[in-house]
Length: 414
Ligand code: BGC
Image 1 (cartoon, rainbow, N blue to C red):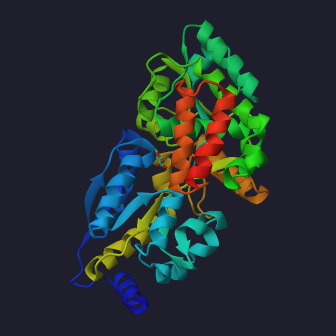
Image 2 (image 1 turned 90 degrees about the horizontal axis):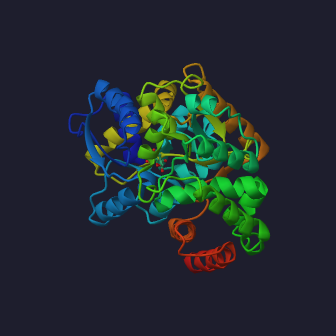
């Protein structure tokens, strides 16, 4: 196996052999306008190297549908060349022996020196590279329409209470305060930020990384649910089931003031030809400045037949190039997963994102998103989505009950 991989790596470096299939088949959930534009950067890079692209798109933000489709393909013994994947999903496939080995390329290119150690937990298994990080997204951002902000005389909210006061102002001015996509993964993604804001990042870590029961049961967690309920009062009545990018479009058009969303939202602003500081503003979710709650899109490299390995290595190599990490992430809204990519091509939000990742990483404030499968395995994250969404939609009626349900659900899923 190791020698076959080495042979492929050499084959790739020196030009693939005639028997190789010159096609990359990739499963992903990048189907919004901004996401598709970012993916085009990759398709074009690979086309330049002579690889055709076999697209396997599975719509649905957060990737739940994509993960179901992937599971079926892998179970049928027909995995894609690579799949977009988040956190512990990759760990599960690696542990099940479903991923390949691209270590020779990783060593040759020195990835271990440029990718944050926290991420390497997900891109390697027992020291072997089996996935590549495309980007670093983070969930603790808010995105505002600048003209709407000026209209209401709003200023950057620094605390959760400031944020509520700002939403109130928008409401009084007849602007929808909060553009929300009412789908479980989106509400859970919002709750990640609310918890970090309410309790601080150390509390977030205790609760979601350590699953510390006293933190999960605490008054701080109750207060986090209270705060989440406060935000519910600022949505429009049609939020249930709405896709995340339609919520972003409400802010782009100025129908709504703000969306709380990971920085893939910026990809939609960019795709609509809007500019940071001129048309839209980005701030960290109030009360979380200095912390980065991350979710990195990775391409998991599956065990593929020998004649597809050169294509897989070409994909990995292209993805990890400095120029791609810049060009792709400028369009996607995320920041590079390599720490040695210059921020020159990025707008002010991207520059802040890059600086934030470095600072948070140095300060121990770079933490995985619970909602996005970077804090816990999928079953636990799914249980979290479930409780948050039931609370948000009123099926769980109080913060007290939500905390009880959360502890129960997480314990069952562990
Ligand atoms: C992914 C992003 C994607 C977003 C919405 C997140 O889980 O990490 O790349 O843009 O879902 O589809």
